Image (cartoon, rainbow, N blue to C red; front, side):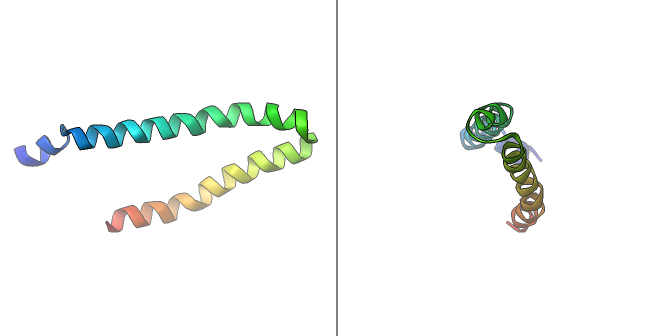
Length: 72
């Protein structure tokens, strides 16, 4: 048990968690700003469609990504 617990304190695990956090933050910072940017450059319906497609793509990909991660 001590060996498995020690793996969570490794430098590699910390770096993976930090990279994952930064990636998550970058996507979450993009979504609130994207409609404002798109509204200035395209009509409102297209902006809503693009933001909706991003959300639907994220929902559609997550089960497959989760399955792939569970297999490793």
